[in-house]
Length: 270
Image (cartoon, rainbow, N blue to C red; front, side):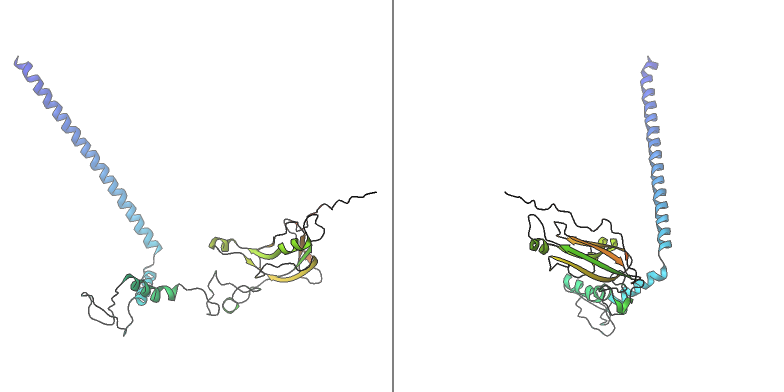
């Protein structure tokens, strides 16, 4: 009977010991995982610091700091009104602002406006990509010079708005216009419009006419922009005038041709 009475107590002690061992094992596993996470984080921080060290130059960083300090700190001999208790009292270095607007105006005046300004042609600085070598009416000749290796082209534009079965020639002529433009993906990515040779789209003043325009363009993807020619009555061609005595017609894709409209049917009565 004594042995039977002591058996449950012994089993209870064994269960408590097993539970304690499990808790110690779980704590050891958790500690190991924490150490692994700390080690991984330390490796990441170390790699990040190495990358910063490789990318940044202490000399360049010092120049940036000194430039910002010279721009933002008050100039010597300039006194600013100060009411802060933390000011040192030195009128050449203390500055106090009474509102957020004063802080923003101060930063705009001393930092933003002198550095981030719109390019100005004639300041002896060629601000690429907003300023570029001049050709036609584009670019800044004063700062960037003239564009080399331009191509002399002849653009021939022919129009015949007569003979439409439904619309009058004047209506068709008034709706049509054209221009010569440069496809520039960089300008489009910046949100700027393509450069077009004529400041305004060219219109038509005669029902039937042929117009010749000579242009000097830079290398690139130029295209003829035709707007409002709903009946397809405007056609043309482009010639390379590098050799003026032997103009070479350039291939256009798609071909710049007129649409063939059906003639108005005529009824005969007897």
